[in-house]
Structures are given as structure tokens and as C-alpha cells.
Amino acid sequence: MTFLALLLLLASARVELVDQVYVVGADNWGYGPEIQLKQQLALVGVRFETEGRTDRVRVALMRRDDMEKLRAGLPHGVVEVSQELAAGSLTYPVQAPDQYVVVIENPASKPASVRVQVWLDFGSPRSTVTQLSPRRQFTVIAISFAVFFAIVTFSARRLLRVVRRPDAH
Image (cartoon, rainbow, N blue to C red):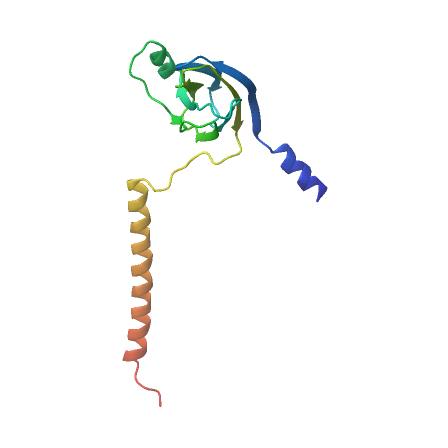
């Protein structure tokens, strides 16, 4: 039992990346930690809390390329974004190796101090797929029909044999 507990402890795949306070200027964006996922995919988690409980910020997870577009004032994408809150969290199962950045938006007219914690969880499920691809759907349906008709054919043959057999009484 102790060996199993030790094995589970060693299998823990959560890595804390950042636990830091960022000061974001009034009506501005602040740039948090960069996250480089080169090979292994992970669940990225971000927890944030403003030091002034009345301050509200929005936290976003972006690809590094999109952050550069944001800095240049160009249209950009966002991987995941929170609502404007004094404290909150967001998680995102990263599906593609890339460089990601945590970005903090302060829409208020005064600077905000935000404590940000970022972690990676490599032990989480790698996929959030909730539906099979059309090709796999077709395969499952075809196999199901084949098995169904094989059972019906087998049963029908057995029943016909019993019905056609002259009564032994």
C-alpha cells in the first residue's frame, strides 16, 4: 500500500510556474509569464487576485504571436479569457505545442496590483473531444450494424431449423 501511495505521489504532474504580483498601469495591458510547450501538451491553469478588492481585471491566455499583434495594435486572437473580476481563474487544455503568454488587462483609471499564479498539469486528460470524428462515427455504426445483422441471421437460422424439424412426439 505504501508503494502505491509513493507511486501516485511521484506521478504527480503539476508544475507551479509563477506566483508573483504584477502591477498593471491604468487602462493598460500587463504581460505575465511566458509558457513554452514544445512537445508535451498540458492543462494550463491561471489563478489571479487583485490586491485592492474593488479593482477588476481581465486575464487572458494568448499565443505569443497574438501578444505581439496586441502590442502592435493589430487584430489578434485569444486562446482563453476570463471575465472582468477582482479574483478568478481560468484553465485551458493546450492542444498544440507553442509559446503562450498570460496577459492582464486593467480597464480601470488607476493602476492595479494583481497576484498571478500559473501552473501546468501534465497529468490531466490531453483532449476535451466530446464527439467522434465523422470517419470514426461511420466505423462504429458500420460495425454495430454488422454485429446486429449477424446476431439476427444466426437467431433466424436457429429458429427456422427448429420450426422445420418434424415433431419428434
